[in-house]
Length: 287
Image (cartoon, rainbow, N blue to C red; front, side, top):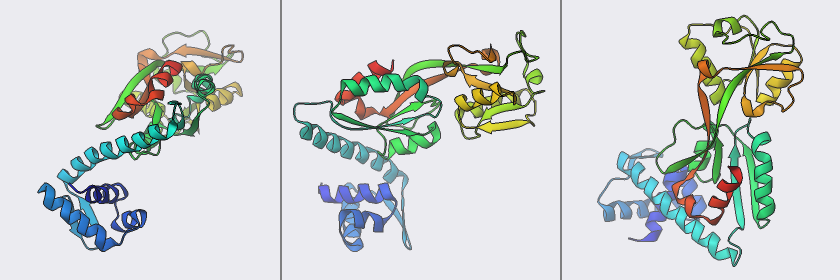
């Protein structure tokens, strides 16, 4: 198999565009097209459906692109390891971190970074829905968050289990209550995460299952913001237990596991990343 043909297929599939792949590889579009046809002939399969100004991967092409991605990931790691010399914990590591998680994981990531100063670490704030595509296309190396499902080729490792707690200002009518129903909570303004976050979807699903409308909502981005708004007396909110201040002070809280269950925080990465030297060290630091 001609590696150049495989490379052309990989970048056309990755970018979804013959022109973008040609520009990246510094070749003409006709040259790329010839390489694709040679690869199809060699493999005996049709990789693309050809339309005017458009190439669409066939089902077989999608499967082969996923396998080809593993090949190029391995080559990238080979080049990176070869360039490190004696220090295997060097190079670049990009982490996508859920918006509620920096306060909890920042000290652990900092300790990992100090232990491996040769590793350049970039952290992006992305929720699970945004992080997975970035992980798949190689923009990030690792993502940390609430991931119910992951695509083929991605592994996930449990880091911790989070419980949802209802929080309210000190002296609030809900203070001292136990086993609150969602209908009782819905009588107050609800301060919630944004609609795209896994936590918000979990809360909405529980209210919908109980046929309770949430018609008085204040929407913010993070648990930290919810806590601040609750302290200001603007309503009651749902936050993760790990986000609660160690000395609650102005707020009270109630365990809502009965209504929401628990949420598991995972580290997810491509399966091939488990062989990279920093992988085990990062897991040890985060756990």
